Image 1 (tube, rainbow over the protein chains, first blue to last red):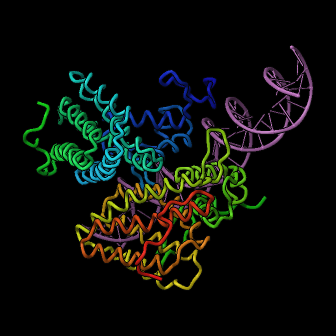
Image 2: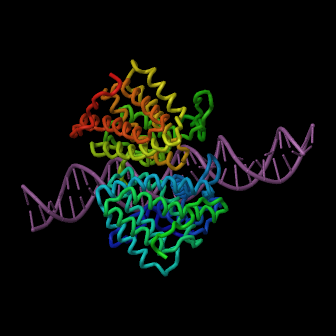
Image 3: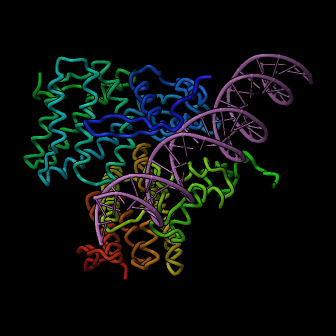
Amino acid sequence: METNTHPCLLERRFVAGRIAAVSIVEAVASDLRLRIFSGELPSAHALTETEVATSYEVARPTAKASIEKLVAEGLLVRGVHKTARVADLGPESVRDIYLARAYLESEVLRRLAAARTVPAGAVQANRDIAALATGAPLDVVEPDMRFHTSLIDAVGNERISRMYSSLVAEVRLCMSRVQSLHLLDTNLIQAEHQKLLELIEAGKGEEAAQLLDQHLGRARERLVAAMGGEAGPEADLPSGLAGQ
Amino acid sequence: METNTHPCLLERRFVAGRIAAVSIVEAVASDLRLRIFSGELPSAHALTETEVATSYEVARPTAKASIEKLVAEGLLVRGVHKTARVADLGPESVRDIYLARAYLESEVLRRLAAARTVPAGAVQANRDIAALATGAPLDVVEPDMRFHTSLIDAVGNERISRMYSSLVAEVRLCMSRVQSLHLLDTNLIQAEHQKLLELIEAGKGEEAAQLLDQHLGRARERLVAAMGGEAGPEADLPSGLAGQ
DNA sequence: ACATGTGTACTTGTTAGACAATCGAGAAGT
DNA sequence: ACTTCTCGATTGTCTAACAAGTACACATGT
């Protein structure tokens, strides 16, 4: 009969020197997310509420809230009265996700280029990628995500950022797959990001949008191919591009 | 000590002849939404969990879940350990919302025009608006929303629809304001929708996107002006447009 | 008078345990 | 073999409770 310490103890964490309090449901959701990204929880794996509750030593309502959060993010799926399962991303879902990304991001690039604003966060993120050129491919995922979200956030529209964030979990899941399958070279990613930033600075919005389409299209079709789908022509490197 | 009937009774409702089961939290959230749209719950009105729980005769966890749903939709705001309040849309939020809409919808129009697909749902919605030309302005909100969501859904991308739905509650709130303030003529709305559909059918994506920008820009700036903000030039009717 | 500390009421975060309703699958009957 | 029934597992919801945080009034000290 352990004394059941921390009944309402909000977990506290240092984040870049500043303090941040996260609720327990957030903490549980966060860890589940990581386990899904890492592949520890495979596609279609069932996640019972009681199972989650006992394994994290929290009450069932808390576990329930965490699960519902992930369902809202698209990482889990479930119907009424049915147990939640890890989302199974088929080739059509992957195309869906990357198309939605391209939708938002290409328009963002046009606007950023028109204003010639190069987001500092994106520059830093790409520097971080460059520093990882020889490291584990999975480490690239975090700065890569940061690069793209920095671009989105730079337009300064709270709703647009929110729309993107409703996609971000699935995007990250795709990226993790791409990286763990070694589908893209880190140097190529970094070089294309760099080129995007230069095009923004030069005010060439349309060209930036096109490059982004290539950038995303290649990742998309290679991932689709690796999942057993039929790859489109975007999977190949266009001739004469920078980066080995 | 009333016998506490329906402990887990999911409410059932007839919806257009078909049956639909909605959970209690959904039902409560739904009603709160209506009360916010109708203005019964004014901006910055506080919504205590216990208050909601007692007034709807549900348990507090249920009320909590409902509130969290509306927070996720942007209709309510709240910080940790603070009571939820009805979101207060200032002029800058209105611009934010309409800009995000334009972002998504203009790109959608281009794609629909390229494929020359005129969504049947949008056509029907605009017919419904036409039938309401002389009715109460607030009745226009529902078919107007339906018109725009039909366009979005017509691209057939689940994620894009989801992104738009993360915006839809706030958009509807703005529309309700516009209509209850009589800021736009029903005939004008209907005529511009009609023109949009025709442009799609003709494959003129760019022109459709521009018309949409006018359509949204006018509503946006008039609403901003009505809220005490400074209206931009888009508030005026461009010369030589159809509709009185 | 002003800033600071204290305290109390209200509200939220979380837990525990319980029961009804529903779903899925295996068992039983035709 | 196909349908129907029953049973366990799981979810939806409820009640009751306590800890922890917030806010505002009040008292205190300088």
